[in-house]
Length: 300
Image 1 (spheres, rainbow, N blue to C red):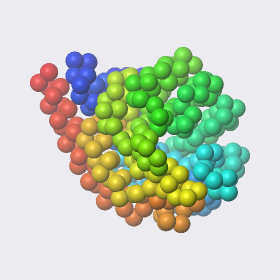
Image 2: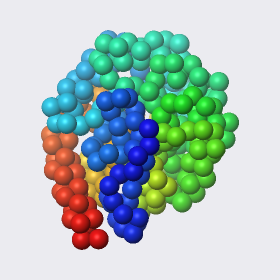
Image 3: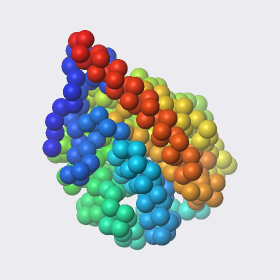
Image 4: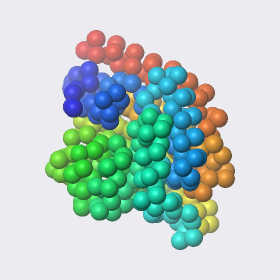
């Protein structure tokens, strides 16, 4: 289902009032209708019990705050820095765990795909198929994801200008995708560092699809840990505050109960215990941004 968010095309310079097509993830959860959505969970699937536990705990935090929630975790981290790093349980076992989370916790689920022949299998379980940033220009992968008729979340590559993501979106649309999310996750800045150009959020939202801000990968230091990627979670909330103030439709955060012991992306993952107070602060900014947008629309 595609319907326009309130707003005026004349207010194209204002991200919040620039209309987008609302993406229906499930009959009870949509992205782009003015509510805030969290796409979150551990970087990589560890065990079934851990996935179910953390998904349920994040769901409860979001539910008490009126935040939409989609569980995220990867069955395979195919782009780990080192060949010896833990990649995940693999496709079959990973989809089994994601299916269990979906059924027992009662939330939609999202995972990455890396090869075109994974798309159909993943679509039998997952509500959202995610295209990793490094692979966002891979035409066959995009078309395979589009053919599933699932929601597709495509991340902007670290090396790509925001305006060039238009062509990525056009590939998905050409493949028949009607429910598209576009994610900002930082841009390479020298070696082992990323920066966020917040203009990219407005640029990509002008494509007409909801925009997601990946607050945890944006503080990653790729390959910066001598064989592993490093990061600095202290900057997750400041960047998320800026993105919410601008008016993103969703936040992507990797969340773990003990990130310093996590097998992947520990340094940039949010501690579960920090999630609730962080969301409380972000929601106050979200409400202020929506109020400002409504005022702008009224004056227009």
